[in-house]
Amino acid sequence: MELNELKTIPVRSLYQNVELAAQKYGSHTLFAFERNKTDYDISYEEFLEYVTAMTRAFIHFGFAGKKIGIIGENCPEWIATYLASMTAGGVAVPIDVALAKEQLVEFAKMAEIDVLAYSSTWASFIEENQDNFEGVTNFVKLNDYSFDFKTAQAYELEKFTSASKIAHTGNAITNISIPKQDPDRMSIMLFTSGTTGTSKIVMLSQKNICTVINSARGPLAKFTEDDVLLSVLPVHHTYELTCGIFCAMDHGCKICINDSIKHVTKNLKKYKPTGMTVVPLYVEVFYNSIMKNVRKQGIEKTFNFALKASTAAKKVNIDLSKKLFGKVTEAFGGRLCKLVCGGAALRPELVSTFRAIGIEIVQGYGITECAPLVSVIPFGVYNPKSCGKIVDSMQVFIDKENPTDEFGEIVVKGDNVMLGYYNNEEATKAVLSSTGWFYTGDYGYIDKKGYLYITGRKKNMIVLQDGKNVFPEEIEEYLGALPHVKECVVIGRQKDNDLAIVALVYPDFEYTDSIGLKSKEEVYNAIREEVNTINRKLVGYKRIATLEFMEEEFEKTPSKKI
Image 1 (tube, rainbow, N blue to C red):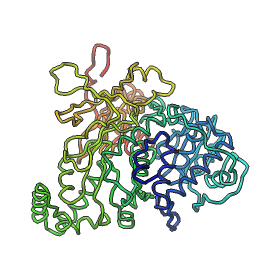
Image 2: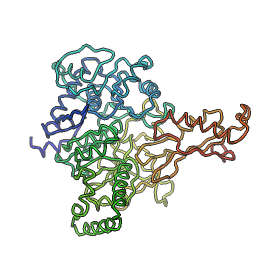
Image 3: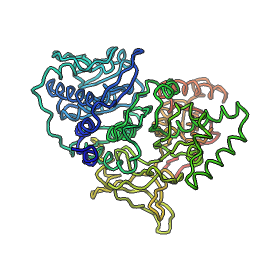
């Protein structure tokens, strides 16, 4: 079959996505990464072999039907384990690598995980606390000291094993066939943000993910096998895994894995990417880096004039960006020209600036419950304030409280909408109608040309610039447990182009007086110490940045809610 024909075949399972990609792109490099100062390249064909071996071994070891938790930094072993888990008939359960270690035990219990795969950074904690992981029968270490998946050697399954040994066993066992895939079966479980008390688990099928892959082919058609991508977002997030990895595989891109956020600048220069999947924080960082150098050289006026000249030239289809900004883009490897940005709102002026420089940014809107893509701007379309058109697999309507309202809640329906929340029928019914309409909890509107615009969040969720979500209730839960605190409210407040987590606290002066804290300053200092303790338990982006004390109790509703 010709390449162009292969590119039109709809993907029905994630194993088929890997299989088709191997047929289309063969020996072309899929993943490039560095480990222990050694560079590795894995071709499309080799990765298919790897996933196939892992799947056979999972079936051989009895992992079919099991829930397999995966936590760790981006690496090929993580992605192969994710794919093999569902292909073997199990369920993949990605877990946030930034999770507080004490919470991992509770999350594993909440998801009823049977097998836990983890990176070396989690090794000591998991091995020391293995007895606390109730129900987990096997532990799989992902990123071994060296990378080897081609050896054929059968191993006995032990409580602690490695991804390499599993792959080696799969290579030695060739009499096990890849089972037929059920695209409608619940195959993925994803945690929403929050503690075990507030977090929900989104249930997705392979059909959900594959619908996004198929729907993204048109808008992302500008990506080809000539593109080199740098993967910087964590793969436990559906946005990166679906759009940054699986969609990129469908288009034949080479994906270079960034090993640490500290090494982004180094890896930009090393791999010289042509494209990236990012959240707004990265765009802001890139922009600030550019402006820092411009100010350092004292050429702000010249730079701004060049931006205007480039923008004007683009209106008559003349591209001056390389001539005017060639030295600027060298900081990003010299070839970066395409960014897909999602996860949070991006300042429209940045879209315009980067376009003038020669880097096209397309924005999208998504939510985990939609696997995650809802809308995206196609490459070649300039609309910096919109988050795109609804993908062709979905229907949408704006649910307005009043017909005259300019905006309302965004409600969608399609094959990428989740199956529901795991073991939480009440939460599922609250957002998913009996006819399949999903209420996103986001406000927006659609213009006459069909472009979607987000105007705000219905929920209390605080969305940070890097796309991470913070639920105020989670932090209020910690604060409310302090005997020094009578009432509290957690909010997001604008600070330096981002939101800072601010806690407003009204102390329990009766209690503090009873333990000998007489002055307000003593009370405040005691609470500050408690908040510092809480912050140490929280993931960095959830930590309280500012603590403010209220002089009076909060105003309340008749039902005594603040």
